[in-house]
Image (tube, rainbow, N blue to C red; front, side, top):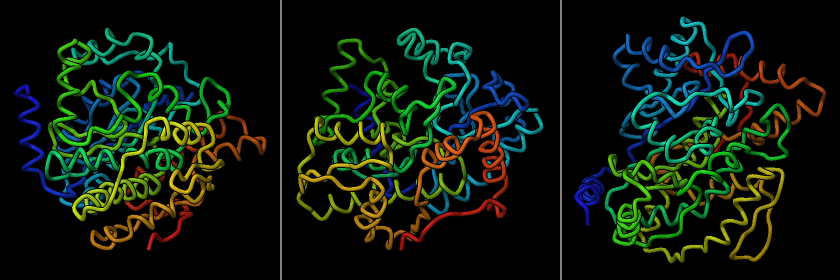
Length: 391
């Protein structure tokens, strides 16, 4: 086993359970046209004037995108508090720089051909390896890191979480529009990124750390990857942080929806770890089975039906949140996580407005204003909240 994988295993063996890190990707927009604009380097430089904010922002492939990171927090409420502070600072900085920030899974009308890759060695490597696949990827996501102690345990958690990824995706879907039209999908982002990138989407189960490390070693031996950051799976063990990272979800138009979704994801990872500890019987679902739900989530989101494979029956996708809340109830009580999940996802709300006759650009402008009102001020009291208690 290579030294970096040995080191990664050591990091997991020393990790702390249920620390949390949040990562939110935002569109950088021209304030007049609301087109994506290539201003990442300027916005990053301005953010660096505040040492705390500068340490929390990062680039994500294209120079019309910026990511805000909470960093390692001791628990979920701590992560939310950090992220709220950084969001507020980022939005204020963006306003001073004369740009707006948007937050849905894909920009509804900006051309991918106009986007530029960030000029760093890392992203030049990504572009050189992927070409059109990298150029086409103007998408925006929410990532959640949850600390899991023990390398074999972390892989066991990944194996368990992989089969609920379609449910999380359906709940998060926020990107029905792309290329200036209704895509007919609930999450065009997933089709553009998760379906196109190599070593992406829902991985096969690895069973334990040796199974995982053996495959990563193989990929390196045959020159498919040179570093672990080229493993873009929708759930993965993060080698540097000792976390299980869930990467399946669309970016959310409001801070409230992003926080609620992150809370649910945190609870799912933690419950999977508790199930592992308690030896609850679990046989990893076949990839071809999960694929059926994955496509249904992409196409229909919460408007369609998902498959309960144990029952060999369909159920309304709108019930996915309640099913996950029921499963995670024990660990949510333990950790004090009560996500306020909306009855409908952003894709449904956006499409409803388009069907009612609202112009796509007018609709997006209203969404951007909602995003600013919500993310731009901690607590966002003026944004209406449509939710339910998870208790």
